[in-house]
Image 1 (tube, one colour):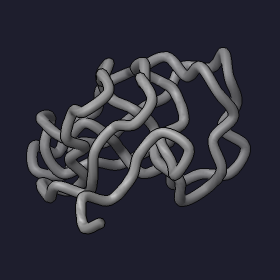
Image 2 (cartoon, rainbow, N blue to C red):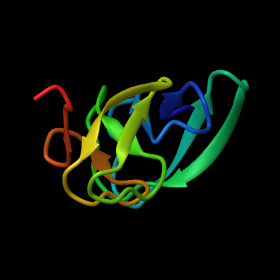
Image 3 (cartoon, rainbow, N blue to C red):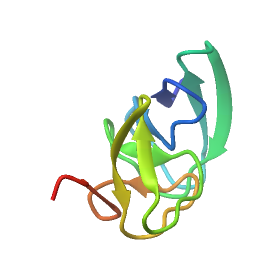
Length: 93
């Protein structure tokens, strides 16, 4: 089962595409540009449509989703954690 998708293996977050993603399970992430899957650990319950971190990110790091800069990290994020408004903010203001 595919749990999340990302375009490029360099994306720092993937989008969760199934309901019921729970801490402690292994997630299968589909890399669309390469038509292959990878496994990552899940360390938080993550709602459908929200982001999961694909790598560790420090405060100030740029967050990349689908090859696009979507903001900066404002609280450290570990691989497999929920990446959302509590730890990512836009660079626009």
